[in-house]
Image (cartoon, rainbow, N blue to C red; front, side, top):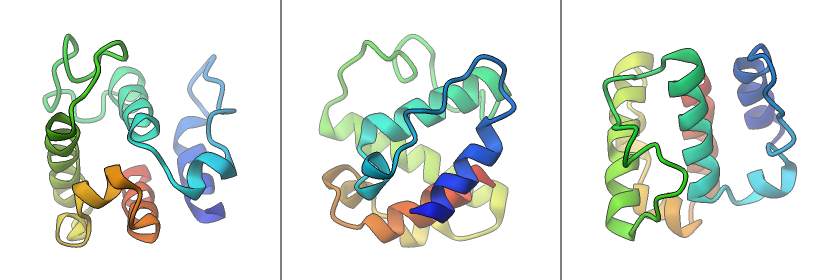
Length: 117
């Protein structure tokens, strides 16, 4: 948990006006999809990460309610781009279905740490 928090904070801390209080040990103990979605929205909106990957009106809109299928599709795209950027086969280790169900926290942390790099 502490390594994941450190990785995320190191990437996000230089964004002016961003409050990082949402990155808590409690949230990281079993990161919900909404947490990952928030991180991605910040990375795309403030840092230009993977601008081509998601549509602002639907996939990055915090008001939209995602179905299970939508969440899995969102995470498949994200794991693919993290794999391409980092060169680490994140998409082979990470199961989007397990992330959204909270069943594989260690792999979720592996994924979040790679996302932060």
